[in-house]
Length: 362
Image (cartoon, rainbow, N blue to C red):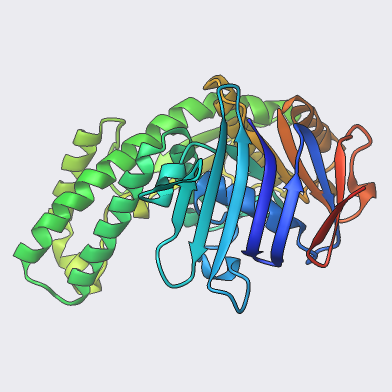
């Protein structure tokens, strides 16, 4: 798939932007702070229905305005789809597909598929477990849009249950939320484990191809014992542990069991990557995760958009070569660089200069 036209209104630094885009490599050149990553962010927002950079929508809306718009024409082998998203600061976002309003922006899930690699991906290796949980859940949602609703329902149940725990509500008020938390949480854990099973061999292959000698593996640390890909079994385990830790939860006012407490484990040889891996090894792990994600879509019969956001200046020659190879094979790639000399010589495509929120082709 590829984006043939992108239109932004009051999104980040852009009062208005109209971009005609091509398959192949689309290169955006500009100093930091000029607005090139904002273009990337708008594409990723359509894929994830949230920013890959920040947790809140408010900074996406241009200061002094109440709403921002992202409109894109998505081309695939089967059809052309016009998606329109209205991002609001004070109310729910609204969306249209082919000019027809839809009930929720979540109905855009699955229309745009994209994989982004950026310097912030080092947080996958060095950051908090929440970074790795988000990586798994965002990939789950892109591959199986139905799970967006499951994850949202889980987060809503968790928020309500925590509120009841903090207010020391009676047990009978907690019980229905225990059921909801366990039901949705069990399905989220099952989905994550199934995803890890599918992506691990691709991840190992990608890491090996980066000329690294140690074996890289994935694991899953859960707040329940022996989690499985069976959502009902996970549900029963969550309910059992909720009973065991009931007094601790009441004392602390938070839910102590569920996928919000879990972590994707990244291992290199016999050690966890975090705290043991060198800077180069950490980059390779992050890159291997994203390359494996891209390969997973290809195996699904999809052709996701590939986004390389200001990464070439951060990588050594061998890692740059791997990205160049996959970029050349992708149906559409968005590449951002601060200066043209950061581009590998093998990269060629349509070039745009980005200056003070204005974009012109060169």
